[in-house]
Amino acid sequence: MNLERRISVLIIIIFILTLGLIITSTPRTEVIYNANVTLYPDIINVLDKVSNINLQNKEKTLSFKKNNTGDWEIINKDNFPAQMNLVNDLLLGVANLKVIEQKTKDPKLYSLLQVDDVTNENSNAIAMTLKDLNDNILVNLLVGKRERQTILGSKAEQLYIRKDGDPQSWLVEGNLPVSLEFKDWVNQPLLPITANDIQKIIISNNYSKDPVVIYKETNDGDFYVKETTEKIATITPIQQNNILIHKLSNIEYYHVIGYDKLSTKWQPSLKLEIHTAHKFNIKIEMCKTKKHIYARVLVSFVGDDKNIQDPIRYNKLNKINAFSELWLFHISDEIYNLVNQSQQDLVTALKT
Image 1 (cartoon, rainbow, N blue to C red):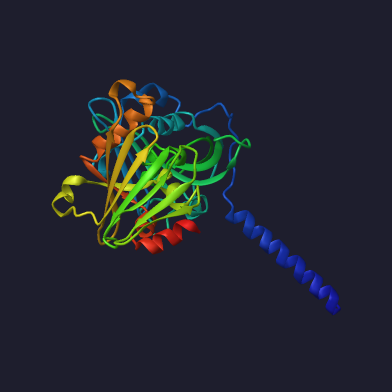
Image 2 (tube, rainbow, N blue to C red):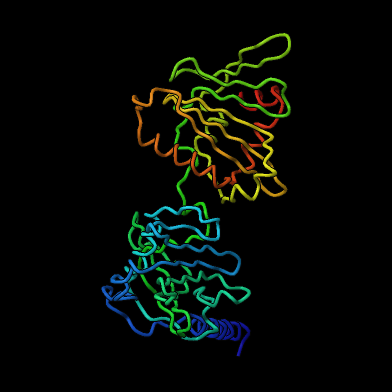
């Protein structure tokens, strides 16, 4: 046998061995199911009895509980209110999971589908448990790898799951929003205002003796910075859509902490006062702890209560005002670092 034939035979053998390895390592499809078969056929009838939801991976946990008024609270985040529609999306998502096909029962292959137990060191699964008021388990599911969207633009996707304690894994179709990020379950952004709503911002920090004032003379006019020194006040034009305006109108909060836990140590080093076109004044106090920046938001209406132009926004701001009596909001370091600097540095940042 010449050298060329030996090389060809060797290549064929390597190909066959590689193909065999791929086949044996890939979870086998055992049974094809009708897409109208749901994973939990009867769960839709008891969704209203779900009173506890627990989401957990190897690093994080989010726990929800339905209170006496029927509202959902995130109990491991100082009972902060969760958005009802987002929790309902999760519950309906469980009820509408459609079975596509049966997958592996081999625990050695669970990691390929990311449905191994969350107690495993390298697990990428999310464990979801739904319980009723009597602590009975209604759903105990391991949510694994997401495969693909079934229809372009649709929320439905294919994902691998396994019922906890059951060796059988499945490929299912549906929309199952099981985020472990606190910010994905609450009303965002923090301030229900747009960039166009902001008319004036007064900034007070430890770097400047006098506050820095950012304002516009008309609702759709340009922004200016009024810098006050001991001798002179100068007016500087800045970008209409400057970085501070953009960040304030899109500010998100990552988690919360009970105000009572920091109230005795609450010494804000930075304050913002925002005047809006809707006659709302929003005061934001910021305090830097060892780990995070926390904000407290206080809202007042300076117009005629009988002439409120935007009652929906008014109610949202009042709710935030009430929240700040109970919770402090963990926000991004970016706004704090941007504003907590000298007048000169701040104006330079807003002009670029």
